[in-house]
Image (tube, rainbow, N blue to C red; front, side, top):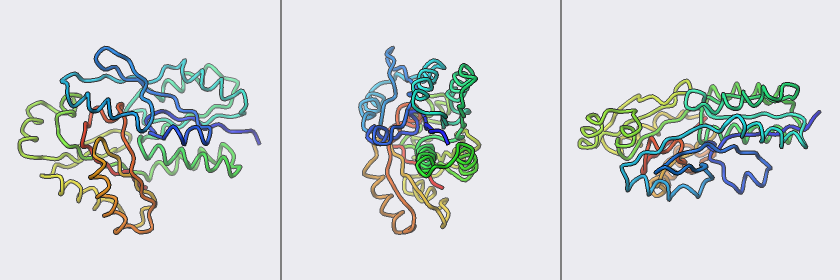
Amino acid sequence: MGKIKIITDSTSYISKEFKEKVGLEVVSLNYIFDDETFKEGFRGEYDDFFKKLESTKLFPTTSQPSAGEFYDAFVDSLKDHDEIIAIVLSSKLSGTYNSAVLAKNMLEDKKVTIIDSETSASNLRFLVEDALDMVNLGKSSEEIVNFINDKKKNMHILLTTGTLEYLSRGGRLSSVQSTIGNFLSIKPIIELQDGELKLIEKVRGSNKAISFLIDKIPSDVQKISICQILNIDEAKKVKILLEAKYPNAEISIDELGPVIGAHLGPKTLGICYY
C-alpha cells in the first residue's frame, strides 16, 4: 500500500504546531484588507486582524488559493507519497474546492482525491484529524474517502454574533436590519446547512443565544468545539456548561480566522459538533 498524504486548507484552523508535528500540508486562503493581500495564517495569529476590523469601516475581501498553489503542494507531496487526499472547505462558501480540482487535473496520471467537506472550521479539522489517524492505521485511500464522505453528513455548525454589523458589511444583511437588530440586542442564530451559512433563528440577548446553541446539541455528541473570535472568556464559560451537560464528549475551544470570521466579527461564538 502506498503512502498517503493528507492536505487541507487554512479554514480548518489547525495550529501550526500540529501541522508541523504530523506533517500536514495546509494551503492558505487569502484576504485583502486596506489594499494589502495576506495569507490567512494559523491559530494565534488572528487577533491583529480582528482588532483592525473593529476599528475601521473598511471591509476585507477574501479569495481562494489558486490552482497553481494547490498544484505546487501536490507536486511537493508526491515526492515522497504515492497518493494525496485533500479535504477542503465547502464549495458553497469558496472556490477553494474548484482550485484543488483544477490542480488535480493537471496531474492526471497521479492518484489525487479532492473531498468537498461541505463544512469548515473545527468540523473540517475533525475530518482532517480522522483522516490522519486512518493513515497511521494503514487504511486505504478508498476506506478513508468513504469514511470522510459518510461522516461529514453528521456534522453541524451553529453560530451567533456579538453584533449584526459585520453580516451587514459583508452583504449578508441589510443595514436597516442591522441597525434595528443591534438596537434591540437581537442575536442571529446561523447554521451551516448543506454547505451554506443560513439564518435559522433570531433571539434577544446573548444568554438566550447561547442557550439555543447548547440545546441543539444531541445527547450522544462525541466531539464539540467552541469557536470564538476575541471572545475567549465567554467560550470558557460555555465550555464549563458543556462539560457538565456532556461529560462523555471531547470538548475544545478554537479560534475562527479572517476568511470565515470577517463576516461574523468580534464576539462571535459558535458550536461545531458531531
